[in-house]
Length: 195
Image (cartoon, rainbow, N blue to C red; front, side, top):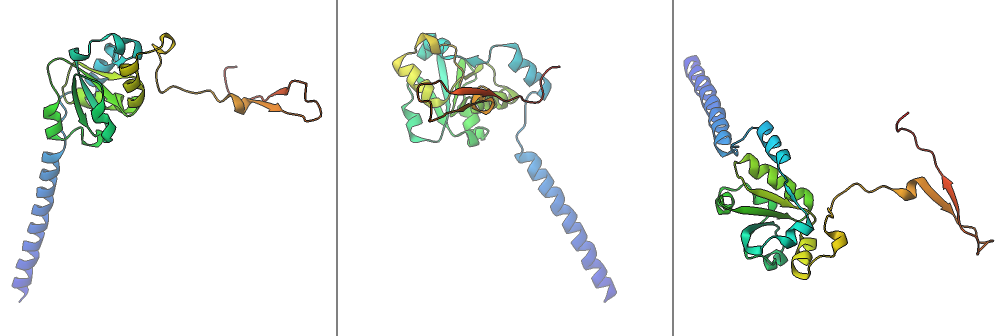
């Protein structure tokens, strides 16, 4: 009876170890493989101009690039571009979607926001794609720029930038007794900065 229990325990241990090895090999096989190490991706992204500003977007011929539109919204299919590929950002690294991205010619990446386009640029560069550029601003703004043109003051505008919170540091006190007088501006000192 003891030898049967020992054999069952040995078989269970071997089966357990084999299951763990199979799971590890399955994860290794399903994991995305990157063509470039992180340092080379970083140098490739910072070397060249990777962000297309609205002024440049209006000067580039629409048939000279492929628009990679990262959106799962139905209005993305109406994007004004000669060659376009529409896919959700979450499925960017699927094998089927990677095969649909052209390796020849320029690819402009339009994200639902600027950060998403830059993240996609980094992921695709790590996968070995070249001739990629992310487009500044969100998808709706770029759609408006391509259909209606652009005002000269917005030619170099980026969608995501730091916004200074003026109302936090400059508060106004409105008094009802003096309606004609200007509101008094109070300056609040903040900690930090250079000394």
